[in-house]
Image (cartoon, rainbow, N blue to C red; front, side, top):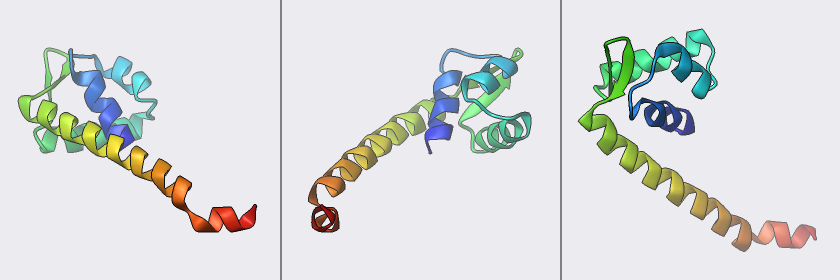
Length: 89
């Protein structure tokens, strides 16, 4: 999910292929796999030699950010209340 968020973030203002590949830290093979998937889902488009976020992509990115934030908060709470960690100390 973090990888998809990174790709979508990079596409917000329009970005060329190579720059997006480096920004998301992807091999060419993975870059092609993920960009094709995101294009197929209608989240990004390739236009004028740039990947751009669609309106659907902006909406998806907002939900994804919210999900990742909640996931992070839950992981922190879990580590605080995890009894098994306390018994090991």
